[in-house]
Structure formats: C-alpha cells, structure tokens
Length: 99
Image (cartoon, rainbow, N blue to C red; front, side, top):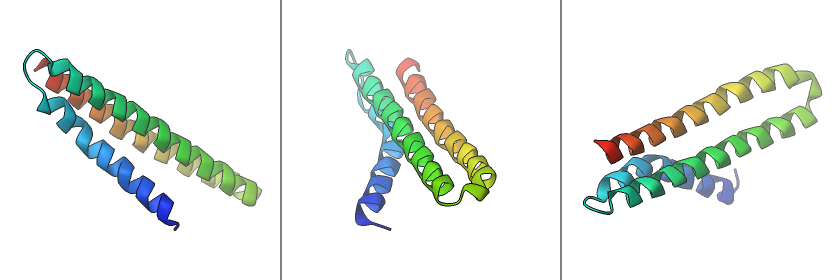
C-alpha cells in the first residue's frame, strides 16, 4: 500500500474520532462553532470515504468484469458502514450542541 493511501486512511480515522470532541470543546456563547466545524468535518469524511469506496469498486470491476456482482455487494456494505459512522458523528455533534 502506498504511503499516501496509508496517511489518508489515518487522517480519515483521526477526523472520525475527533469530530465529536470538536463539538464538545466549545462552551458558552460560541458553542455552535465547534459543533459546526465537527459536522462539516464529518460530512467531508463521508464524502471522501464513499468516493474511495466507489473508486476502488469501479477499478476492481474494470479489471475483473466477471466479479462485478461480488464487488458491487461488498461496495454497498462498505459504503453503508462509512455512511453509518458519519451519521453517528453527526448525531454526536448535534447531541453535544443541544444537550
């Protein structure tokens, strides 16, 4: 695996874990700023993650068209996991904003 891929995966993992913490750090009159930044980073992470899943799936289907069904099934599962993790981060940011 190339170094750039490893670093981008590490950055996405860091964003996914730090997003709720960004929402919790601000308190007082500017409490919404941290939650807004956290939600924005969660959305960016979702977009990048689903883009990487789709790119990898299309590359795999282009190399082995006979395996399209298996690759497509795995792609949908992985896209759902990425989307679910992002939605959990968004819900945590909203919960920390309003609670």
